[in-house]
Length: 193
Image 1 (spheres, rainbow, N blue to C red):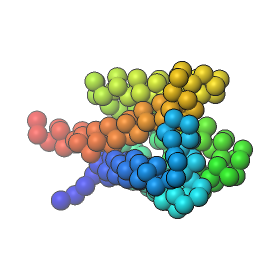
Image 2 (cartoon, rainbow, N blue to C red):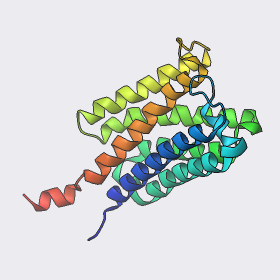
Image 3 (cartoon, rainbow, N blue to C red):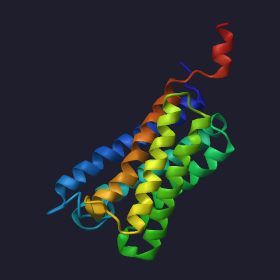
Image 4 (spheres, rainbow, N blue to C red):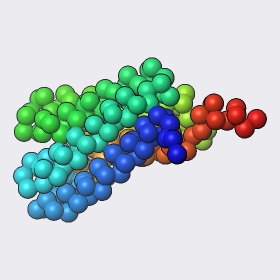
């Protein structure tokens, strides 16, 4: 059985996001006194959960980048560029934890922005209704980012608002990866006609 590059990209996106989500939840459970409302996710990148969080973050970003090397032609130039910057920033968040100060903050901001933009422009590759959901998830992440940057946490505190930026992006990566895994190439579809 031959796996197409488009499917390989999808598999790497899906597996990368899934392992990250699961390991972040484990890190949150292991971190003494951790609160999803008041703690930033990057707090998990220091202390006793640092190796778990940072390595999982680097793996997630690396899977995005490796997947793009294999399947970039399947998704178009614009999305490849924004997704590559997103993946590089994800790696950067793991390599430069919050103890690196401004550098970490700038990289995390890039991750949030380019992840949201990738979700929005992926509508060109996806079919409805997933294309609409992707745009919606990207917009939710951008609105939450603006609220977080203006310190308007709407009652869910800093950690809660950060999750309103990041979780829509995780959901998008899982959905996008799944769509790429299940998509038939134009070549395969035309051979059945």
